[in-house]
Length: 571
Image 1 (tube, rainbow, N blue to C red):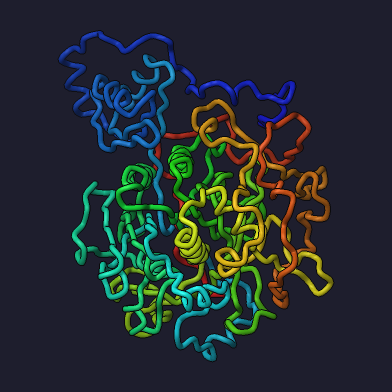
Image 2: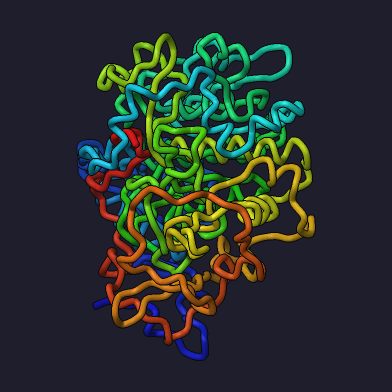
């Protein structure tokens, strides 16, 4: 079975240090041969598909596409690429005549790639009719954000971008005297006037309101984790939850390009796509890494494919970013003794050996805003909670809770870097422990544990300069000079463990049950060594191989869908 990690010598895999070039690329320059009229006619009628063309710069990528007769559809400066419509002959010409040029078939990205059946009975059904949350503040209370709001720490002055299905212009998600809301349509590459934004799905509105719904939304008994942030809503999915790599990357390109003008400090990505390559070789991941390099804190969902191991998707598998799993309060928001890890929450490690997720946040039966005519509400009307509110579960919702928390942190300390934010969130998180003090869930399931917003903002006792991702360079990664592996490994028996840490082995002993209290006192030290990067050697065992075989598979088809995890049964 293909195993790239068996080819290392002297601790360095040479191909990681070289530009990754698709097979068939030659070293000659662009072709200048003329095209016969019959060839021109054939080219006009040949079926075309969408591609991402990456080259030395976006401008040069555009030039070679035009020289080949292709049509430019997207400018993707953030990854030195363009989107283009090309036929097979044009693709072949590009591959054969331009050394270093890379061709990726556009991939479908969907809000609805995975539909989940009802979860096993965990005893929560009996709570549904009894559950009452009159102020919609259960997530705020669980993570301590309500105490920050009492001290006027509400995200004011911080811009948070959300790439999703848009945000419906409704009370609580509009500009006012103390904050601004921007709407950008990645499909059309245009700004939308404030008050004219529509969300035909409802997912984007739900996620955005968890982060940013202001106090005008309290008429519905709800407000966001960071109710005074500037919201930048980027629409990259339609009402059916359908989008593509091209549109999502264009959305990230917009966020990076306008980060200073709109003071964008946080990017929420409540999506999880299938993995088809190493983390550094995926163009969506490259865009995410570029955003992190630009100083934007990227918060990504772990995905809703748990509880199996190695189910973290793109872009949650990017080692630099903050990847979020979900816990649930079991419909008892003021009783932490029956909280548990949501069964749908995806689990690490990643294929490169990084521990994921980094943290957990409330993601079960989260009440938030939803347009009345949104498709999700139409399909699941039983979870409507009065005018303008809807209940959903998922790591999408948990991700939004963390994005709001990051905004609170940056309001208090605007100079924090993304690596410092990540470190502090992890340092103040609370892992779930059993009665004897042992971990209730493995580090691959819960990371550092449930976030504590109050501690992350006001009670952090560590060094201000402490940062995660030590020993790694996102700039080197993007330039192809160096790529990294994490400290997770798998033994001959199939158990996952973290090298240099004892006791954190994935076994059947970590059951999905309730009864674990989220307690203080189990803080990860020694610089979070599971986030440190290092060069892979040939001593690490990956018995199951990689799910993508035959090297890098980027097919011409659009059959490989991905998910923003918009629907799972409530927990």
